[in-house]
Image (cartoon, rainbow, N blue to C red; front, side, top):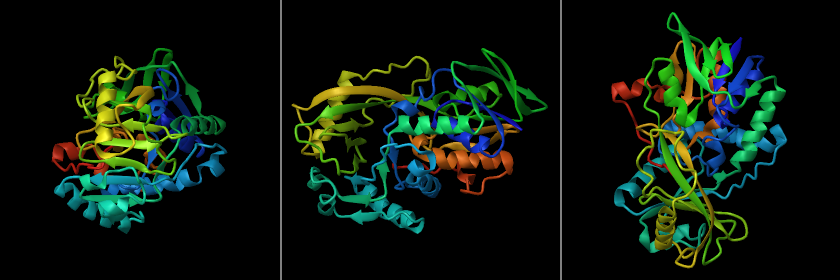
Length: 382
C-alpha cells in the first residue's frame, strides 16, 4: 500500500511515522520546509482542559504519547508540566467552567474548579479580584514544537517514509470518484490513499479533490517579553479566557505573551501573510496582560515575536475523516494541531488500515456536521 501525505507539519509527519511503522509505503509532500507552516510557530501547549468530549479524548490519547515521548523517540522536547490555569470574568463563563471540569474529570483529567483567590497558589501574579472563577489541571503543560516535529520526521524516515520538501502538490487525481494520486511540481505520484494534513492550506487541497471544506487560515501572533516583574518558571500557562489574553513562562523570568485582539479576520491567502509581529498588536497584548497581572506594564520590553497561522473551522474542531474515497482529511485543528498530533496520527493509520477509528470516537469531527447543523463549538480556544 502506498500513501501520499500532503503537508510536512507535525500532523503530517506523525501520520507518516504511524503508517510507515506499520509497513505502509509513505511519501510526504511539503511545499516548503518541514514545519514551516504552523508547527514551527506554535506556542506548544499540551492540555486536557477542553470544553467538548472529543477534544478531551484526543488530548488524553495524545498525552499518553507526550508523557513517554523522550523514552520512545530519544528526543528531549523540553516538556514542562506546569499546568494550565483558565480564568473567567463573566458569570456565563464561570458557569461553563463547572460543567467543563465535571466532563473532563469523567474522562480522567485531574482538573479542578477554583475560587479566584485559590488560583493565586498556582499563579501569584494574577489580580484575582478581576475574576469570578478559575480551573486548573496539573498535568497540562507545554513543549518545544520544533524538537517534537524533528523527532517525528526522523522517526518516520527511519521507518521507511520518504519526506520530500519543496514539493508542492498542484492537483489531486481522481478516478471513479476515488482519490488515486497527486500531481506535484516535481511529477506525478500514485497512491492508494492521500492524507490531507496541509493545515492552513488544507482547504485548497480539498478543493483540488472537488470538495469544499470550511477550513480557513487565521493569522495569530506571539511575543517574548522581558516583564517588569519576573515570571516564575513554575507558573502555569495562564489564560484570561473572556479577553483572550494569555501568557506562559519562558526561561530567566521572561514570558511568552499572546492573545486574540485584532488578529480576528481570517487571511484567505496563507501564502501571503506577514510572519513578523505587528507592534500595535504587541502593545495591545502587553496592555491586556497588564490589566490582570502584576508582571507586565509600560516598562516591559519586547525581545522577539512572530506570527503564524491557525487552520480554523467554524466550531474550532478539526475535521478528521475519509472525506471522499481515498482521501483522509486531518486538518482544521484551530490551534490545537500540535498537541493532538499523536492521537490524530494514530487515527489516520486506523482509517487507512482498518477502515474505521477505534482510538477515539471521531463522529463529531465529520465535515457532515456543518451541513447538519450539529456543530458544538470549542470554547476553550487559546
